[in-house]
Length: 130
Image (cartoon, rainbow, N blue to C red; front, side, top):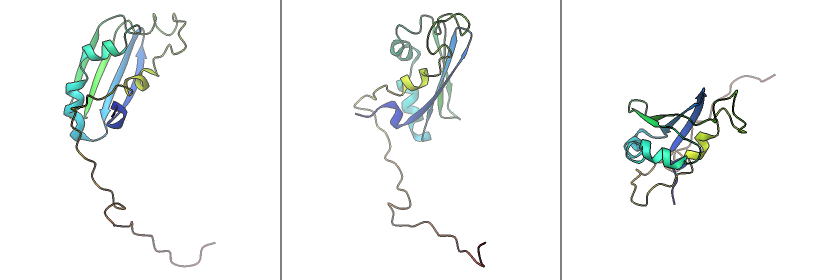
């Protein structure tokens, strides 16, 4: 089973009691799948018990990213929370564990040079090395 981590990376941060989360497609061809899969409702459900407030979604197609602002997500904020991760930095790791639906279509990766039988050109050294 494929997971979100197979097609995307994520970053998270904090501001007071709000956590921010950006999910960025590794390949721009996968952005439409992120846009369909990652709704505000899906993200709120994924973080049930952590995010107590609303989740706002912002689409960033030119960056191949979907950005979320999660309100009431950090136990009152860094200076008030007793949570081990009061900054919300691990929230990005949690979203990457989201399974992709079985019917999700992900374009096959482009072959790399080695798979295509092309070896990278080796640098030519001239002169004596110290």
